[in-house]
Image 1: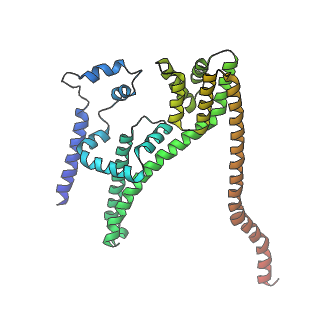
Image 2: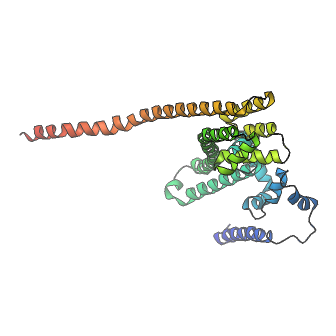
Image 3: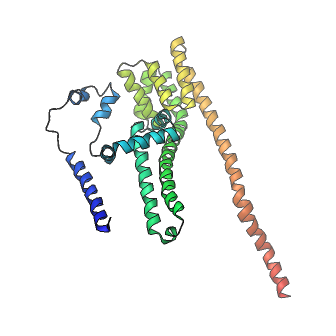
Length: 312
């Protein structure tokens, strides 16, 4: 294949994908389906309806997925078998606050892998140093780049979930104390949750707002709290939910339960700070021993060595 023909094939494919994306903006001329007519009226009780209404038709991944559906399907199944099942991905997506599905994440992972594969192949064909390598290494470098692209997307999701859980953990004692004040003032548990979600900002407050919305749509409070604990999978939130549900079933005053939980959360945060300080103290020894101390000794000994060598 000649270079002009290859460029023509590439430009034609890009033009086709672009025209397809533009055509997807045109309203459908056919009669809307039943799901399209009913979805806007059940947004408050159906997550599937919210996902259907908020779906965009110009996103590049669905277009590419439709074009290369068999290949994408095989790659996604391979990634799921090697990098972990759907349950792990769904848990990390919920913990990171993402609204994507596991299938959409696998599609993004495939795209990242293909982009890294193309970048590796371009580097092998354009960099003169890499073109002198053996053929096996020239073939293996793009494959390694593709695997690294998939692993990088998985690592980015894991890091986003870990960072969001850390923010929730830092907000946890303050939210508990606020709820304790609301309960002590005579409000109910649902009113306290609603007040916290309205007047405070943060990841945990958003999750509590979701609990309040679920309760107002008819979900029992205990079930909504248990769904929250299952969705976040944060140990402190899970302990809180277990104790709150037990207090609701036994009729125990919730203010005392939340006050004890807030004190435990403060103590746990203090212990965490002490552990982090201990680790940082050990890490500070590395520049002290290998950089500062050798330079200090050098500055102390160098004048004497210079005088001895000069013979004064």
